[in-house]
Length: 387
Length: 140
Image (cartoon, rainbow over all chains, first blue to last red; front, side, top):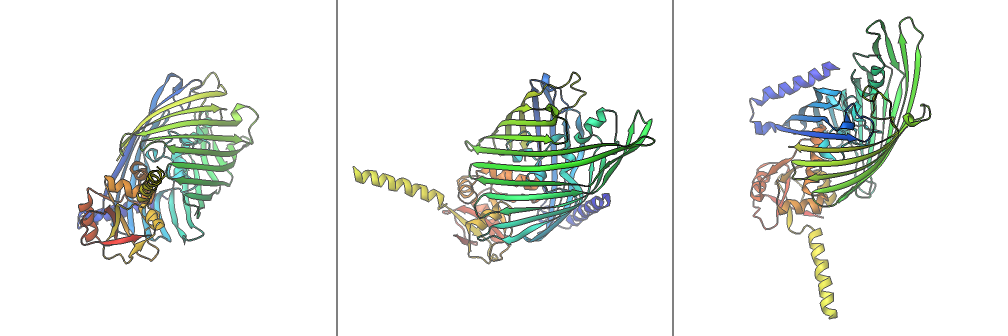
């Protein structure tokens, strides 16, 4: 799949070379970016691998996007990101790099490293300037695993099946390729802290499709997506390399069902998703061990634009692992109250309060050595600039 | 007394209708655009990046004003969003790789000049601004 990325970059370079013969204006080269700085404080427990109970500013993101449109139907763009949140990230990564050919509204295709258009917000979940929340509902959009589930190497086909009228519009997206969950990803945090390392991460093929029905009721969209991940595998080591082995994830589906109503000052949305995964750890010379997780996730959210600059919102986000033993580690229930103030179209600030019951999301053991308390209040302040 | 109350109600209703209809803004297009009119739904889809073609098959490229009363009124009347929320929507498309940001022009004169010389473009200006060289689309 890296060949595909190399191809996309080659295309970009080709377009760049071609650009010497044209004016920059003709190429429609654009440069955009944004940067955010967050501050976290929790009443109990340290969250998201930060020292949040002492107050932590360890959440910084900066994004640079460069794009060109050499001909009307073809766009080429690349986006890089610096991301640090506690012990996550602290590096510059490639968000995506893609060439996009849109024949018309009915069919377009992009390929390279591309955003995966699953669920309601997956392809924009890392774009902080585009929504009111400091943290999207963590039950479906966990920030600790954001970089892994956001994009894949491969392609996306997209378009509109029906052109409106009495039945509304039906939009489709289909994707396929390869996804790699990095070794430092949140999905692997628990086993990493237990000393079981997957230095190259885990990954494999992925494909799926999504339908968005823009209903005749103005502002209402209803949709569904399903991603299929065939067998994934990775190399494992433990005991400082004394034992080696493999980790296997049995084939699984990731269905999501969602609805969004957005009109004038009001936004209401809800989403349900399921993530059932069977994991096998097989160390050489030892019997295999099995684990099964079955996350049922949902959220419901609403926001209202109080003034042209001030927006307020609330959501309830819940996750339950139906395979986990009873207790606070089985679930997470997060009531969130949020506000955003736009000083201008370039500068904004956010404030958010989370009332979290349960410990299923966002905690690690290294920074909570004395165990976790079942309830936590998390306060987030954030400032952002975008251009 | 009754008459003055009635006329006040009438004036109030008329002022609301005037704002809702976006009466102070006109939609302009390059002469190459085949359409003579555009529906409000098409206009919203084109200016939010959800479509690049009008119902009659005309392929169009939206052009924005950077700011100002005509910009605010157009977005309120035909997109249903304020400027900040509107541009945040476009940024979502740009940063997720789904679109390029439309060109934003400084004022009505610049918008008219750009639309007049750029095939396929569609924009909006204050009704009172000169608009020679472009066609005015009827919004229905």
